[in-house]
Image 1: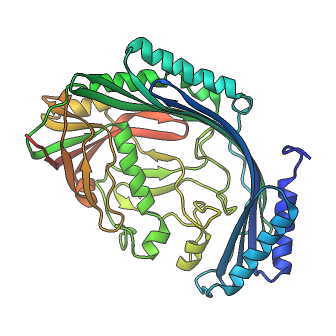
Image 2: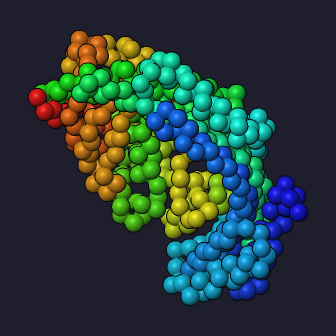
Length: 444
């Protein structure tokens, strides 16, 4: 029997039936196969090209709310049966959890267009290697001594989810990506940057040109200089802004809030940012890289406004946290019991990024960087690795040995503009953000 002939839904259903017969009160099973190709680039050459295919079955069983989880790789039926029995035994031995209510019932939802692409599924190892080689050649044409590294990869998956509540879902998906970084050295000076592209569909990507963006970025970051400390306007470019907003949405996960581990604890319904910020999580965007009709537990997805004009409007729930809170799952559950955001789509402002930057007399433009608030306190201490000094509305030079500090609510309260334009990736919007009066620590 080939991978394509195996009926994963029938397999998942059979595992659910076995678990229930063995004493589980609730059960869901995910089964599927994935094919992947990964080409690694190192020192402007092909380091490795790997291809693989795997099959997995994962079982969650619940007894008195206690969960048992077991997973197995491969299709050996005895090993799968043993994993089901193990999950039920673990659930039986687990501490009872009165906060567990139930697994989601069947929730029909229209399929999201563009999740699977035959062109991606048909790519061979040689074709993926050719994409990597094209990037290496493009980078060398720009800078003969460039040090290019990274990965070009694809994944093709097919699977099913079945549960004791009657959920019976089948899905298939593709994803292709290129992530490359470029390093340039000019004596004691060094410039480094990275670029990426990804998508569900090959037509949505320009994979062969990713290295061009990485080299251009590395050029921009040559000649970095130290700056004095002070309070400055901080402009977050699309990449930096997207990373920052992603941490906000993650902090709005109900599990961390229910456990008292999020800086958003006690903030639901309250103003947490300037009114210019509205942030929507939408897992139904056609061709979106994180789109899908259902989450990992079978709950139908729908757009969720997490922050509405500066107010924390909704939390992200899975089936467990929703039951504990007496509400409905928002469709952000994973099959392992976690909570995961999907496509982030901030509401855009009314002026382009260039106009926002032109109004900055003294500031820092952060092209990329990890502004990661402490998950519990919201405190921020981040190095400025890809930043420029801004004077008179212009980027003057890259900066080195600088940091920004503060608290997430200080930054959100000083946010005064979201750009009307944005970098777009499949399903995702990445606008520019402007934040006034931020403490920047220099080393001049």
